[in-house]
Image (cartoon, rainbow, N blue to C red; front, side, top):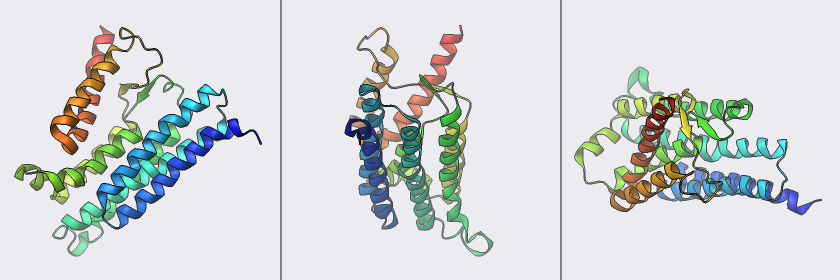
Length: 238
């Protein structure tokens, strides 16, 4: 067995392992630990491709493993977290004929699955993305219970404990994953400020958002990423 060839696959499987651990924490409503393990999984997800390119060992097997691992870490985990949030805050909406209301949170997992399958066959997404990447969506969803836990804003508490607002976020999440909206890639292939000005600007603003807003900065930076991509698309068209 060529060990070098298997290194990216091992990293991908570690991503999957992190996703499985995050699932356990999410089941137990320990959203903070679930968030950290998803972050670790996403970190590993970035480096499996890096090492595959570095060692020139990219393969169809690696591509499939990557999507399968992402399906758990960035697809099933955020779906479960939304389910748990709806269970906690949808007691009135879940009464009577709406008792299955929280299960709609798994629409996020369905949207993630469709996106990952489509990503593997979409030749347009080599240097950029069409629709929100599953890791970004996962960070957005997993940050919500942490924002709720640590916020002092009554408005945010009212929104994130409103089952109908959570349902709107669920459908919006599934839509954004598969929307025909070009989003710029965060991968920096050359350390040239001119060629990566957009990426560097985004990273600097993201750092400021995280420093000043902590967990609330995560959904804000995801929204900023989408808005910046839309503005960039309009500039490029002119």
